[in-house]
Image (tube, rainbow, N blue to C red; front, side):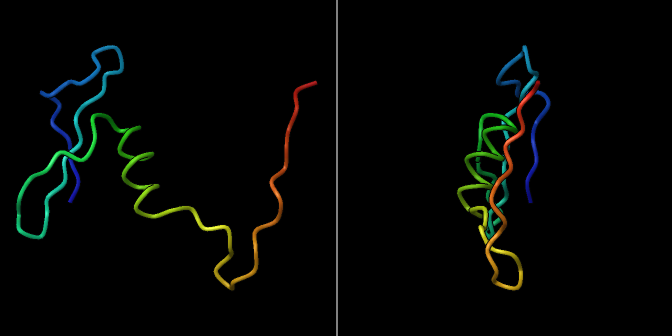
Length: 68
């Protein structure tokens, strides 16, 4: 389980809040200082982005878009 405490503001200009997780031993642990830190540091590190489709074939190359 993941949650945050709106009373614990880590960046008032955001506003951003500390993000917490509950372990299997039912301990509350701080996992990130903000939601972006949680996504980039916890989710992406724990579940890295795959470069393959579900059937094992590689993704097509990235397209680059440019403004005219």
